[in-house]
Image 1 (cartoon, protein in one colour):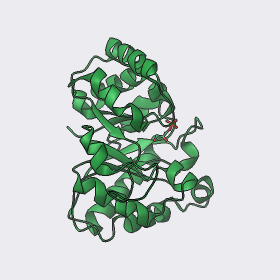
Image 2 (tube, helix red, strand yellow; image 1 turned 90 degrees about the vertical axis):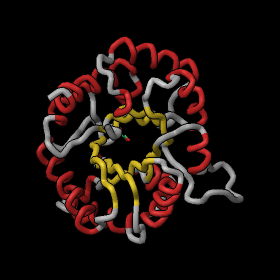
Image 3 (cartoon, helix red, strand yellow; image 1 turned 30 degrees about the horizontal axis):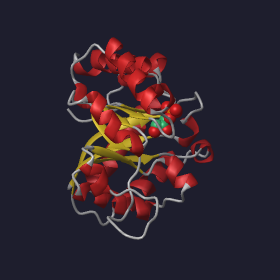
Image 4 (cartoon, protein in one colour; image 1 turned 120 degrees about the horizontal axis):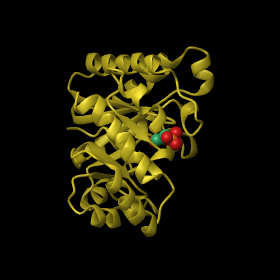
Length: 252
Ligand code: 13P
């Protein structure tokens, strides 16, 4: 099973946090499909987390990779380095990176190529701003992000897309689940019709996902999972969300 429930810990964590999180998670998770779960900690903790999960099957990934493989790029971390640490995926083009670090769709395209070259599954993040949403421009904005990020990529063996409306991230607000479902359907249509050689595995939703709203999301046909920020920092809540996912999508 592909990655479905993914934690993005952003700029949070410590060794102590990793230990406590794992204890809470294992106390509350009642499934056995560990390979559908992913955690993207800060890169400095990847190795430590790998040790804690010690081949339990949970995938560990990066929150970002550089668009080049090597070079005079102080502070950056490359796809081959992330692969070398045993990671299986990387988040790419998160809106925080687009906004705070000026990542363009063209840079994101280079990062997708880097990930593919190293057999890391890229989780490409897309999303519209509040103003774009209010102006009913969501579809156009997402279509442009998809086309610009994927143009020039002839083949990509696996791709996961995360739809994360910028205004829903960390705000407690989410679009209604039917709307998300139709956005996901549109994303699948655009990728499949324009880029038939790209293996789109799933479309996740991200933005204020928590245990309370998880079931309304996972009941939707085209919501294949979730990319979770704030709520994923609690090992228990992450486990409970994964349990809801199992009930509604896996065991159904
Ligand atoms: P929140 O779940 O905190 O809204 O963050 C979502 C996100 O940005 C995941 O990548």
